[in-house]
Length: 243
Image (tube, rainbow, N blue to C red; front, side, top):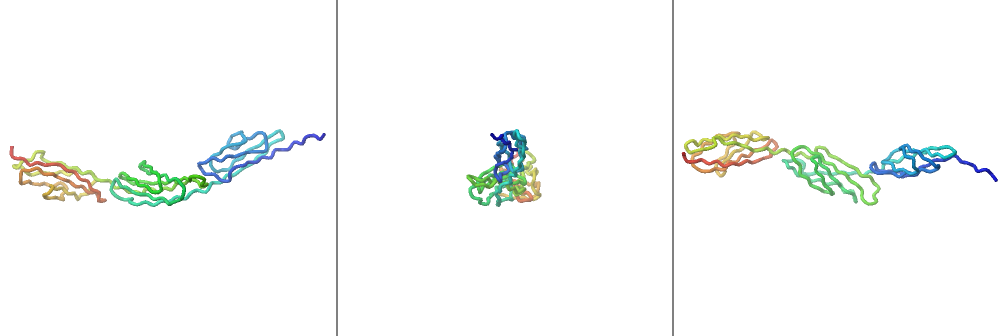
């Protein structure tokens, strides 16, 4: 009877050629009875996250051997999108249109915290400059990898001024009918309009008006910013008979 011949182990690794960055690759080692992976696992089969180079040392009573595998990055989708209505007074409502990539999921995120799904979406932004990002994820058996594209400060929503004014004195009589309107608007350009509805108007910042009849008047102040955004404030002024 011939003696048994012991053979030195021959390590090998089976696994996918490519994998996406956020996906796991299942690797299977063979050729021995014990295994030590470069990731620290000691089982014959392991799951690793994303592409990279992985190795395993295979051992048995006759010695050990090492094998290495390189898992390459998978082909990524190439998303792109256009936007319309990206400048205007807040809230500025813009529309976003993604390039059609077939059977994929379209997920939108905006720097104001908003989110949306779909190939074409709309979103209204508060005052400020805002970013938009699109992430596309394949559906079904599409082997391509998810990808994200972003466009910083793509939306410019201009702030709307705050129109405010005060009336002095607080009580107006026909004996002392001169009224001082104090413009207290915030975020407006110098050119403002103060008017008595259905009567006269003024473009002075803080006009002085003398009334000639006992009546109640609706006063409206229209404040306009440098970008053309407007706001309106109204109040009622009554000119009374002498006490």
